[in-house]
Image 1 (spheres, rainbow, N blue to C red):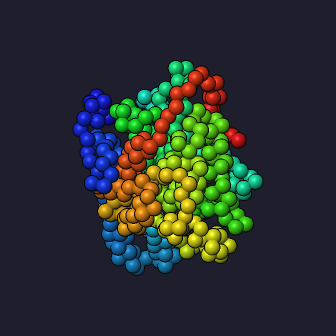
Image 2 (image 1 turned 120 degrees about the vertical axis):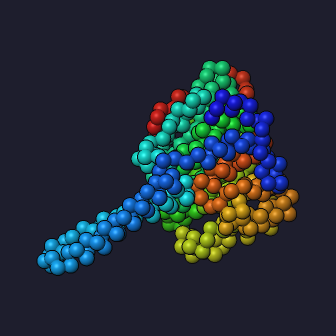
Image 3 (image 1 turned 90 degrees about the vertical axis):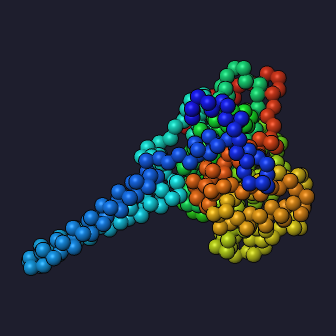
Length: 394
């Protein structure tokens, strides 16, 4: 960001005409920056190399048509392996350029920045629940600038929980989406208050699409996310205790999970931030629920919203874009919630589709919405929470 970042709030970009939330264009440009592994020039270069390799292969094939059989077939096998590898690499790089998943080589190796320029931190913790059939798994916790300052020893921070999509993991919110940089900039420009952001692991196994459900005879992912993870975070960090200080969000399957878990656990969360949402867990989830259609319907917001009991008002932001195949479903869910007198809004984000790049575009609006409904607390002197190590274990 440039030296004029502090004045960015004076030059605001209005999103759509449905929510009234505003985000400065400079922040959107930050989200849209392309890393070296996402460059279309890299894709073009690999594609050109592939074409050149095919041309060379054809010429060599013609030239060696009369060579001995064994030698000819060995050469063909080598060329075939090279072309297959290059084709696969070109396809993967092209997909990454479109989706915006891995921006740099260090990110590909799982290396992420943990210290922000403004004094923020991203702390890796490990949270498990063997009794729930959930082994210890990494989660990432963003701590805002000044969290460790003695002057803030009595301050408690609201928390935003972010669920990743499938396939994916919690690292995606730090790697594919520059959540730390977004938080730092929005706090510095007074667009949001200082908040803690937590990205837990929502998979039910090794890259298993859990849909954040309590599976029959399997991992109890819903309970893990709503009880174990929340309990761990409240026990290790200075959080606002109670639903008024918690938001749950996510993208794609995580957007569905945030909506479902938020509505099913109104005592825990007061805000739902659902990016690229859909209204049910999909027919494949029947297998996770032991074939029970009753359990499936109980986890399908588009089925239960019309008849569910609202014990609390739920502030819900359903975020989508005109390029998102789920946009009509997001609009439908917003209408259903408003029909139940809930403060639900539909946020149409310019340029957004259904990719991690779009998740980055939508996150500033989601955070701004959360800021409108979450409040921090400054109490009397509180004991300092134990300073987290780079990796803490339960």
